[in-house]
Image (tube, rainbow, N blue to C red; front, side, top):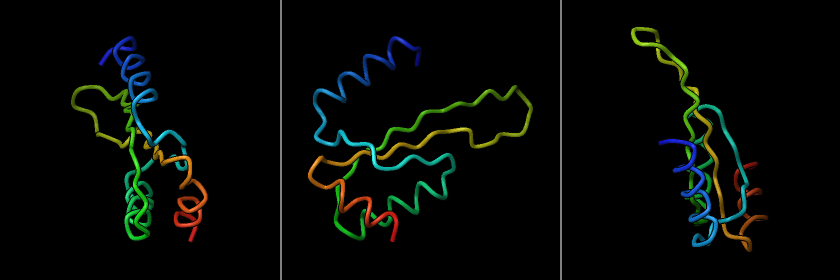
Length: 86
């Protein structure tokens, strides 16, 4: 997806999503899933945005160069932060 398309999607999500508060960012899949599992176990709804920063070339080893952002509702920020950090 190009930069313009990504910008449009970000604006649409900001306008229409109830999950607007960024509570966690991870740069590896394991930490992302740890946070998601904690939110789920506490009954906290969330939205994720995963941005790939892959600059690998064909034939090279593939590293996880993605950014995982987790957003929650405004009134659940405290609960989400408490759950993730428990």
